[in-house]
Image (cartoon, rainbow, N blue to C red; front, side):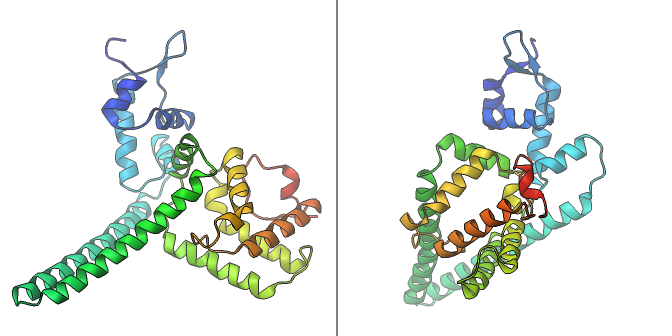
Length: 274
């Protein structure tokens, strides 16, 4: 194994975590050699494969798409790369807009108008602070329910989820929540309630497709405890809506009704139509 490396050396060379490398192995993306004691060793081919995975992820491909590509299975690369190009173009427009603001500020400063530039800088700082505060608030909430190791596993598993606009996704949650709020009070066992449950789980599908039982349990526990942190962050729905959806979900599951997309490990009875 003179041309092979242990996992800690691969971590140093690639910048990936050992957990990420083990996750790639579990997904069948890489196949390191194993010693008699079970220790992983990575040869030149595996190192090259890892570098390809990193490059393809940067190009916007999910781990599932990369696996299909490695297995020489059909994949719509044009659509994937087209979506990635669109996202980068949008980012380029945002950068261009920011540069335009800076150029305008510099021009006004040059004309002896420092007040406008100061106001602009203040607005920029306020916007950055708002984003930072919300991100930190969410992190504070998540830290109460997940260890750093569990959060790392979450990020690695969700890295395989298709890319989408978080802003648009949050808007979908707010729209569904508003419709549920408007319908309350409502019998959790009603057909209308079942319809809301199915919409809920359809919207939750990007998470449920990749969630482990531990991730599912932790998230359920976090939202069941919303009274402690509601108002500090914006989840897209209220505790009242959450409690109704949980009651309607239990009712549907008790009757063996189909409640929508669920993880593969979820009890089979929850998938049947009563």
